Length: 162
Image (tube, rainbow, N blue to C red; front, side, top):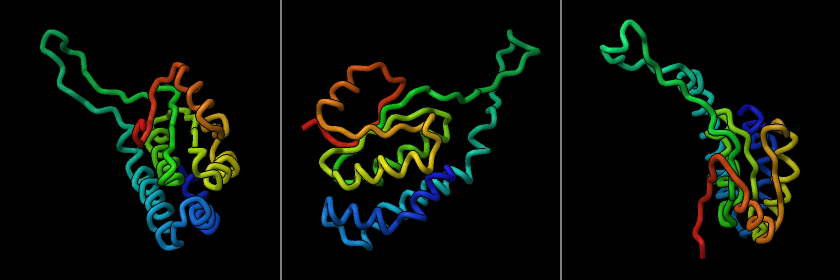
């Protein structure tokens, strides 16, 4: 999570340039709508992670006494993150926050429709997060189609099928 924070804080200018090139997005909108939003997600997760990780004690049925019961949260496993073209940075990185906080590994497939953002993600994410935990796979429809044929423990996607 700290790596995602550093990625955004250290590269906000590059993010703004990529979003300008892909979408014509003004710098202020890129900084507020993408960089600041991601930083907010990261900071919230970091502040709450210890609480989220604690076992949650729950009531134990009388027939199971003197046992105790708790809910233990575990990672789902391997997650596919399909990012849309219209918020190519925010909706590629923000979903990584809860996925990584939960202990999952993630394959990020950025949208090929936003090539500057796709290239920036492919270049920066491996520098800031563990490449054993997060992989970025650039590519087009063929790659996305092939990815969807594979078995995933969870798929995150924002967009529509049209």
